[in-house]
Image (cartoon, rainbow, N blue to C red):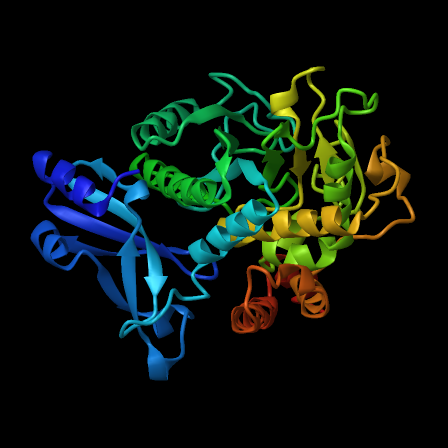
Length: 431
């Protein structure tokens, strides 16, 4: 485990001239300041106005950035470090620091004798400068899955993204064209909750920068193109203890899923309405969570069922290490530190309380229209749920942090929700 001294020695040997200190706010926005190498070498930290990014009040707004040496990356003469956020004047770690919330979730799991691993599928849409999805003559909504060149106009972009991610040490695993026009997906190797959230932030940055350099706009909006599939961030989750994968049970004929795995799913489904406010946290998120576009709308689970909110992959039998559950509600507009942590918190609550997820659902949910709990239809509805159902989050969110999140998101839901859309102009301009 490197120290900051180790990082500085390596940076100096490689001729680093600048240091980029990065941090993340409650919305999941990656922010930064740049210091000269000599300035950072003497200070070993950064400073900023936390009130300007919703992390403190204006009357107590000074905050420190303490770099995490495990996140050090050196590229093109710049040392980049993700940072912890600390309160000023010898104060404590900021409870609103999303990286701190993820670290607390890992600590809670360690207290239960477990570790959590998570691997996201990151979907994004590439647009031209006039905000049209990049397409070929063969591109038609909902039929572009696994297109290859020349039908895939984003082939070169994806290869460049993989190169950049590999250079950052992020271990990309798979990329391909997705179902939507101009839509692609990149998956990275699973890791711990905190480290994988770090990886997501850097992946999103790489995708946007590479697209910009090629003259495109890459967006992680949940629903950027009407009438086509939206962008999800399906998260694959597993729990491990000293004996191995907690979710695996070879004797289970349905999905080789343990009773603990079922309880974990039960916790997610029980809290799915309030979870939605964190894992699908924008007004636009609820334009994705509608029938017919491979996005979940009902709180059901099943094996290999991509219309369910929770899917248990069953590609191969007898592979203990790969047994996991896939939570399909999250989208890439979320803050990954909060989303991963809240999802594990809900699942852990299911294990603690032995919450039965009910029978698995093996039909097409959209066609079956089951009489079960439905996901929220709007951000306001999800926030109402979070306001009334949040006790399962108390190990990781203090009251002030949760209130700040709710307040910021209430304002966003009201402000953005009040703007008329192009569709409303077309439908109502002449009423």
